[in-house]
Length: 555
Image (cartoon, rainbow, N blue to C red; front, side, top):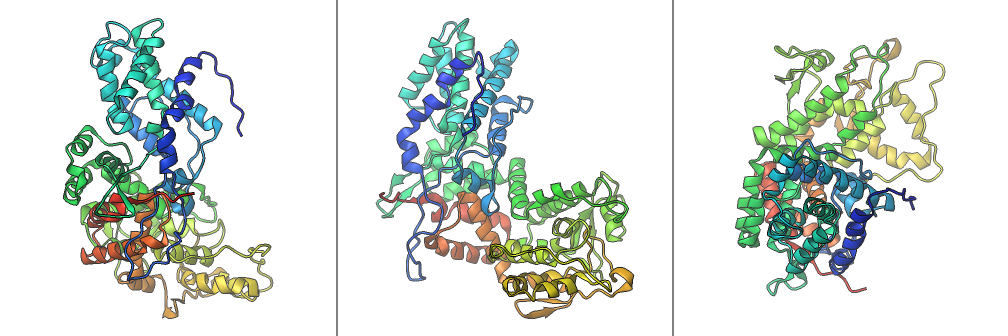
């Protein structure tokens, strides 16, 4: 347990904050806690969809900050929060499965205090924020504001009891003025579990025994955090109030509106950054003397290239989403053009331009771009194992088990004549404890051996030793990474893997056995829509697996 640090002058905000609110949350918190993992049911094609009980996700740091920025403006102070985790790739899963520490509670308190002091310190800013001038503590101005503000923060209307409670807090703490009482009430609302957690309780549905249908407000929350990565706006809450989100067609219409907003692009980029593991670029280092093409700005250029490619496929051309692994179209700046050895008229260090990679060249698709090649390599040499593992896990959604306990995973340094990485790996696989996994990962990883650990294409190893980039995918012989891109262009597992990753991200947990039918159905719909990712999003949010939850199991 992290030791709390005393914070003079915060006792009143602390009294009305997280600890007090958690007691009010009580029953809802207990009702919503779900189990992550496989359900007991052994689902077959003849059985119906069996949904899992809901997870209870806390807002991720990005969701917390973006939700508050909508309410208080982008210039609001941003206090540090407890670090997010991302088991199974996604922060949403970490937010559903980790426990907030005592120090994390304190950080929420400090953040709420800093934000409300910012909002209320300037008379013009607070007047614009509140929309009226309180004449007395807890008056009609205070009550009307707390109703409006609470609806946005809790993502549903406040109950009469909640309104009475928060107005009472504003009255009780109105020292030296009504403004201070209101500020402290707002600070408390921002520390409430009803804001920090996304509760999904649902209501019984006679037409769907064993399931609970999410309410309109719960659907508004689900939609907004998936498609905008922040809380719902007033228009979405109004749609919930009017019953528009109770039916699939209303959900689809709301989702289309959200996807037309620029915030959807940002949210989908966040999904793909996690799915493609672009955060690993942060730790990449290369010696400029050994890798002269690796400029100080190249890492960020590699990240931006992938983001532009994803944005083009998902929102621009709306083409086959699988094509990110096979297309010859990409976006480069001057640094990347030099690394790839291509012409890019108009490109500068800061300006990216669309280019078509040469038809007879070695590159096609994300797996031949700098980001993938660099973050799946060691500082001084390539790593067929890391690159092959990425293909297996990220692109095809196959499980690669961890090495057995006690197994040395380091390669022996080359002795005698220079050895290629392939030769070192082949010697490593003579260890029976290593052979099974490496025979699974290394063959597709060898296909990238023509690219060094900075993503530069080469044809020879040290001392002019020719590079052998041959390998295979599940027994199919391939000559190089371009051959792999051609296979992935029509590989059915690529589309199914995208569906699975999106489902996990949206649900904040790993799918259960009972939900595999939903994944199969969504994968079929994705294929039927020519793998248009935007259509997949609409199919997901209107699917029963998104609009319903399973009943909580009895202890």
